Image (cartoon, rainbow, N blue to C red; front, side, top):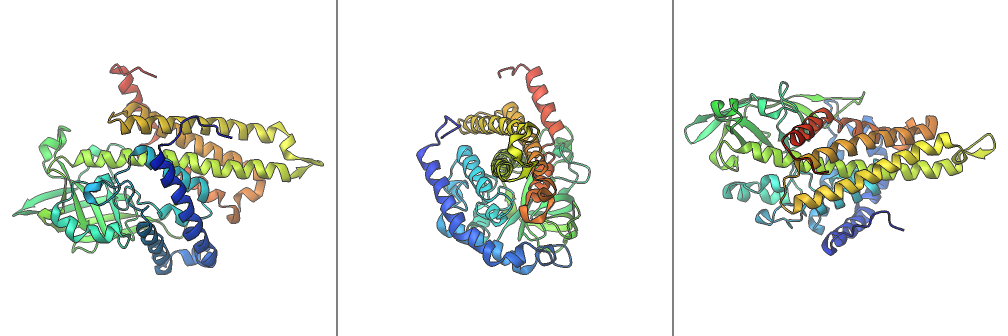
Length: 411
């Protein structure tokens, strides 16, 4: 059986097969060994809302084991020691991870370096000194980073950021705030985007630079952990910078041209979230169809009722379309095309379809669908969040309309 005619290149097939073996050998057994720790929010988070030290230790184990096995930095550029695999591989491997692990074995989400948490094309233009001082531990999975772009007054319109890096001798002084910074409560480094030329930034002609900053630097403060959906903890935080000293080696890429680095990260995030939507939805839909065959109502399996199976079939149709769109846009990007319209279409469609698919599967399971043991609620919450992250659905529709008004009408 095969619903997709497209065949992954041999190296991507090998990587997908390899990551599946890794997940079965290293991730799923750890969940079984540490079930009491990983499945209990009271143990998952410390009193301040961060992951507990024991949980962080297990996450680090996964990163380091994956790095040793050759999977962790698969899409990081060869210039920084990665394997330099492209967007098709990025989508294909993440789709495999989310399809196999869903949200039951969520440690698998740390098996490949996420673009905002570790080695990726975002770090390609690190200085040589930064590569020497910072990169080895990050490539090995011992340390991680976070991506400081969004601010309280600058979310989807990231060009409105107010954080400033003011020249100070050979370096800079960094002041400002960031919000929604994933992994920041636990990261050793943060790539911070700041205005370095206010006039150019106000004209949207550059003036924004990227810096890699240690999270324990004087003046770097985690103001608070952001808790959402009733959780006692979180993986995102509000950050504050008070005259943080930045040395020249911490500059990532060209001075005043950091916004291109930011958009590179956001675009990787859009492929990643499309892969998450397709993979998690496949995981959930398989659960939903299986359950419909064994759950009975009025002396018949509920699979016999169109009111049950038609919503699942509708969700499957949409996820199939999202799968095809994701493979297509990944190939366009690997050819060196910007594909802004197509990427906007894909991410918006995929995450919306994913949220609807998770909702349909939860509905089929009835009250069981909302219990902790099925992990569908965690999956739904995550999918609902990414309808906003890395470009909200409204911003993406705006980008699509602007491209088509400008003459890009190919569909």
